[in-house]
Image 1 (tube, rainbow, N blue to C red):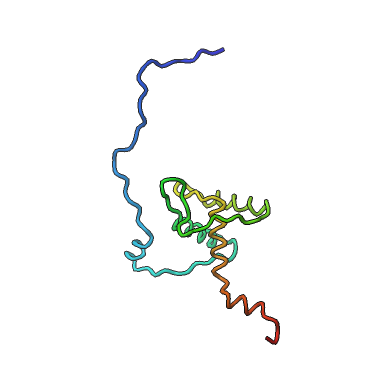
Image 2 (cartoon, rainbow, N blue to C red):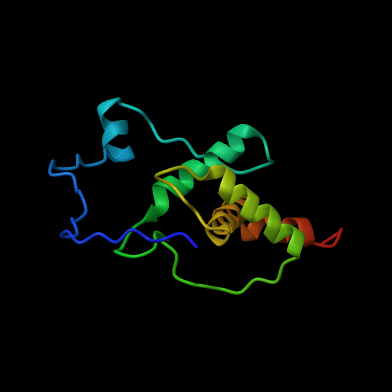
Length: 135
């Protein structure tokens, strides 16, 4: 059996950067500086631009409150029945969207997709589709 090496010196602390971290530029400030106008982006398929729109919405709405980042503007944590393969695809999507700064959960990705899909349907549109002919 190999012998372990034991250190007898003082344990050194972690090295931490002493410089101030620069603040992030908000999308609103950048848009104002560039005189850009806001356009509505909706999710309507699995094309790369759509996945980019989901990622942009996650980046905009995921905020840290000291712990795990949460979706800004959400007020409920709801259980939604779904198939295992759908959940697996949501997990794959969250991994594909992730990078060093953005690590959404499958549930957060699902929240954005559901929100975008529901924005397409107003009660008036739904009633129009569900009306019986001749009403």
